[in-house]
Image (cartoon, rainbow, N blue to C red; front, side, top):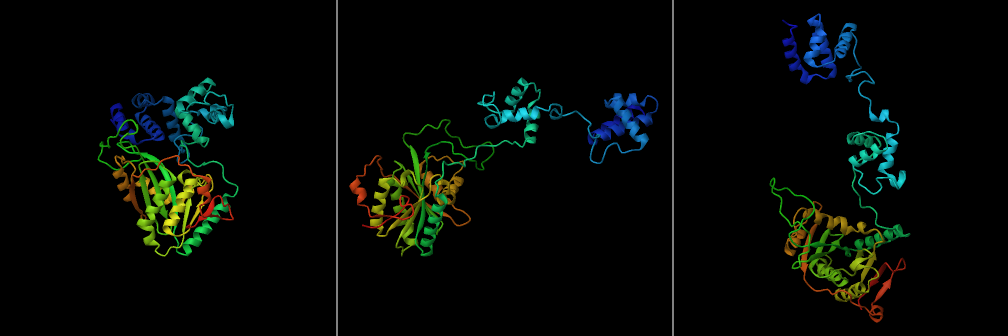
Length: 401
């Protein structure tokens, strides 16, 4: 029998996986009409649909009308009402919880706690809003929020002549480059733990076979930390990195520049009559550091050419060309690789290349560079230093004595 209960059950089991709400309603109504008297009750028991739902399907078929507009399975307004439509104060209260420092009372409950969905749900319950974490996630998206991490963009206050100083450095560098004179960007990177420690980043490895590293990042007394001082040749797109084992001092910094010149610089610029260095205003190459100027005087005497130094304005260290043209690629190259020895570090740095032609040389510097060296006023006065007319404290030239 076409309209028997067993036949209806079989057809429903075969079609139900591919039917949406509207399709199931129309199927149930069609089968109920074909069954005859009592068909609505029989189909309701088989499909689990409410009799009223099947009845609406029968009405749709009899009246020969499209139940809902194309693309919908229910009439507009059908279905369960959202919490946002039922609770007019939910969104404003939620937004005040998410941004209590700028939008609400700074003494609110989530001022000093993690704003997880669970914590937000508990706080809203205390205000009479009975919503689950999933609903809160939908509300936050509606308010224009998304999961975000901190972004490093602020580096302190900027100098009033920052733009003018950048233009000045750029003009100086262009003049040097136009005359085929060397222009280098220098900087020190943070100290790196040497040993079997975790290094941020990931690399492709056999499945379920990560490299095993130490649980704790306690410094290895035998290996210590490595100090990287880099020199980047702007015109030649070549880099030099000295990996130090002692202290980050001006002597270490200038020695790295000297090593770059002996290994790479004088071959690239055999007729150089001057050298330009762009550097940050602090650290081992700080513009106030006396030892930095003393060591540059020695270097100028050794190279027998004047050295022009232009320091970047405060709060702009990330704009130093060596940061995004050299060090960033070194970090990418050794990501996920433990720096188990100084040799490993030197080899990883030296293996860094880019499609634009960057190559890097690296050398281990095991010399001792004691800290706290005092430079007398007499020694400082003996330096053959000429300050530029534009911000001479940041831009100066040291000539051979």
